[in-house]
Length: 134
Image (cartoon, rainbow, N blue to C red; front, side, top):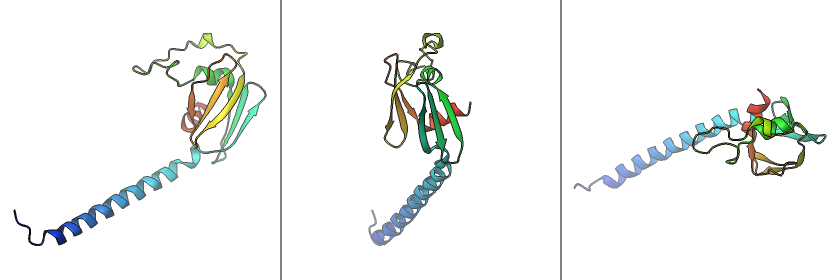
């Protein structure tokens, strides 16, 4: 094993790796910034007992109905974790369902408490945006 000159070669190699890491992280940040604003809500407003309006940072406005949101619940009680198959039957959700409470989860999602007692779904902003564009 030859050790002569290895420390300077190591520091050059390590410096190049750091630059690559920094470049990769910067590219990830730029990519996130390009995608980010579209999924960041500027305003979240409950409309009546069963409506929700989200105005997104890119000025897109999406309106949601409580029953439709409840039917799209992404939680493990409503979607099989292993298969991704929806377990909740659409007909099991009443059209009269209302939003009993809504709260923000971190900086990335909403959690609803529905009038049927269900409250385990965490709806990411990305998922809400996708639902609003359907």
